[in-house]
Length: 394
Image (cartoon, rainbow, N blue to C red):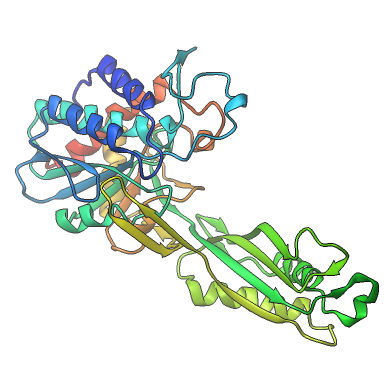
């Protein structure tokens, strides 16, 4: 049986989180707010770990062990003059709650907390659930979550990235790649004396776009997109640039790794510059990301998140479908277009993982970010059902 959820309570919690700024590395107030609400909801144990995550536990410590992750950090506020609402006002207008980070993923944390607590009160869980309000996901995905996962050792996991209460079973991976081309600077009046790194880079970028794009039956095609370029010197004073740098966002498929992705850049450079009589130097690599959490823990890692896919006939997916059907929600599987902590949970830690969250993923990182109250309430009901089925002996 799916428990009745305190609908006004879940909206109130989501509004409180929306009113609490929590950019990556400065989430303390939001984390402490979440921990306090977990305690008020009757979680059996609540802690703030050394990394700065708020973790609430429900259940007796027995298996099955289900971990639910919702990152509580947000991107920095952008385009403030274009927002039509206060990004930290927690405003509700025409049935939608607005705020920076509310879709990605504060509303999901609120929905999960109230859904889990309601189900635990209605029927004690046979297994154990850990709800993690995790930090620094926007800076380095998975890194700050890893200690909580390793300590809890879950049998299965749910990432609560926004899915508008649809079941998600995978995502493409994400990598940030770079290419540096070194040519030879010269006066533009004697351009033939130089080796134009900017023109060489342009040829390479065109070649990247012409590469074949393999496809996954569920996740679609691999994409490699040039996201920025720079040349040296800049601005140029009539100088042929001797160096040029580009970065690429790559949405990768299962089985692709750093070596295979960097090989694509090398092959593109070779093809794009094949007719150049003099070859410039080409270097490629994976960009790094780093963050320091509000507790002082430092993380640094390559921007290389694994793709993941959980088979539709796997036990965790079929059980989740049963749960969502019982809650009156859509059980057919979908997949994420954005990147999630599932890259760590499934792609690195190898934990059977699904996605389920509040809000439309297209609203994430947008001006006037929002979730509908209907999605928020459906999400709370869905989390109650998922807990009953996955950790309640269903």
